[in-house]
Image 1: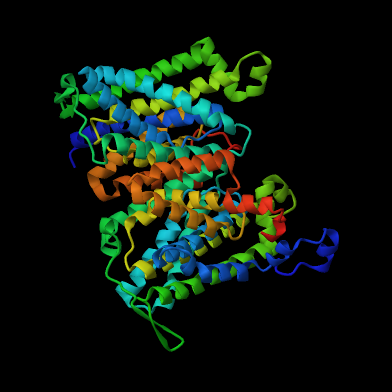
Image 2: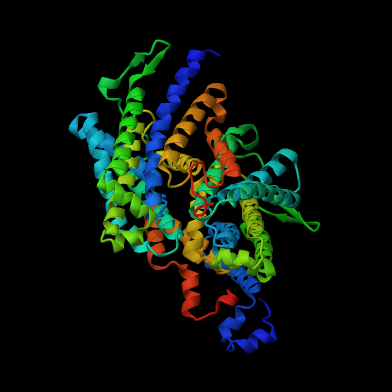
Length: 332
Length: 291
């Protein structure tokens, strides 16, 4: 809620200064992200935080706000990247059109997977999304004439892009960061709009109590499908950003290990909090960077830290911080 | 296409399916009792294969590896339940799933540290090397052994569950753990044993699969997806479902490999999608809990 109505302000005790500031969560998040390249040790790390942050934001809509634990988000992350790469490399589509097409096609993919998987509940949903995402992985592996198979997709480079008639050198890391940040800002604005809409209230009602939401007359099945598609759309935008950034698409992007990494990031940061995904992505990537400096077996530490988070800090870094500061749920 | 070739491929499918059945059974029994889906199941399958290989080379006999690896890894599974999973009962159903996912990272990386990242060949036991003439064609002895052993294990499991007092407690505990506690059964001990059994079955699947696939730290990830597909098709928590779906998936993979090898892995996922569209709870699943 960017501007709480006067009725709400009367009903609740006046929020503290920090709570009031957090009302402008999109602008605040953009401000933090704008400073990120200068706070982190390398520009490459900052770009990765941006990309994974967007993917995790999309996933947070599904897992954090709707309570659906999917293990197949890599399908949309990967699809966004592959579609962008294929559109640019094979069909010579301009980059912004390629991004739009890629998000659209990935949303269609999310609709197909969503129609099948949202018929199931609970743990079944996690298993089915994992299996269907693995299906996408194997299809990409076999359709090598389109996707490059095991070697990944190559042969498309975005070195300079035109922005409103302006030619921008995309190889410059700072330019690249701020162009991609504009896309991230778009994703955050979209996410905030969804959460503030009546639909945003419906998905949270489904998470809290599915039976009750159904009894209130909401179409639970359709809402789940819609949120699955929206979540896929936002995550696929992260995939587009990755394709523009790397100029290759590795096949591993579609593997369920990537889905698992997305799940880890959202939990490290804090599911159900607006900025948590960026905190989670940043923590994970910094952890990976730091630990892999002195051992190639960084995954064992990441796994252990994740297990400790599940056991003792289920709200993640950002969620726990907000709780400690006593900031209300409405302004996350 | 030659009919005898199709029959041989069918047998191959049953051998492949037998390993899937054993692995998926471990997953489904644990879910049926504890309501927990073990995401580290694939990693424990892989560890079972490594343990079997290690114990076989230590004792000089495949048979000791086959016997001891499931027991040892099953005990390790009980330790996991005792130290980690037990803390999560009563919390969200997603939490054990997330925890075991993190655990699979630790297990896979741990194996990489101890045994290295490269695949290791798992020698077929000398008694089972070679092929057997079935009249219509030659079939690897080892695969026939796998089919027979899985049949024996299934029979033993079924008899234990249906005909013994322990089986009665397990079945009643799956239906209503609270009543069992009221009746004076220590349900925590039953859960501990069942989790150990599930993990032991995963390890047994790993040892059996060893000579048929190469043993490497990543082998568990495909197995986990396969086991998920089998349990989803059969219906989570259903033992009959796991057996039939496992054979169905194994046979489909083998037959499709004959006609269109590139579609072999894809077909099982397609099969799952079709089943879900028609029966969201799986072939033998109970509606309500999962669909």
